[in-house]
Image (cartoon, rainbow, N blue to C red; front, side, top):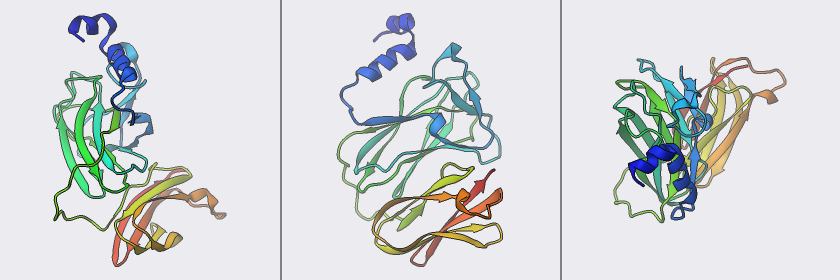
Length: 261
């Protein structure tokens, strides 16, 4: 494919045809901005006159001191090697140092990209090995030297995992941010444990009063997804801040959740 073909048919159209005809990677999926968890004052752009993004929209934000971000979360993935790509709209005001964070239970890395360039094309962020079933979380921060664009993430299965060096220190368990958040009625809470343990997952209100115990008992190693449905309470839960607290053995991790009615 040369520049003449790209100019004649349009870069996005040609790349879309290539994606459709791709036969080397049968196991892949795309997470668009519409399925992401956007925290903060992100705006939506839907004008297709300069189409260098995935789908029919993208999110964007001006950098600020606030901790705003967009987060994409996969379903539970089987062990294997996965390639993580990102796509964005290239703006003249875009940041040259947009930061993506790629996370699993045992892995964390940051990738800095220049969003002024390569709009509408899949750009490789990272290669991640999963030696056990796990989730992938990709987070885009609002920090940078220009406009941050949150569009789409693509994950491709690329075979069996490569060997991981011995001696890497990992956490025994992880508790991920609920999704969606803020939520209206129900939200999902995910956690992963590396060894069998007694687990307690409880919801508390802002005053520290227990609302419900979602998990209470022995759990085998693996990843779990638990639904918290605020509408099931006959007395009704008011809008506001709630906490999900996970105790595994003698350790506790807590996340903050926002209920909006």
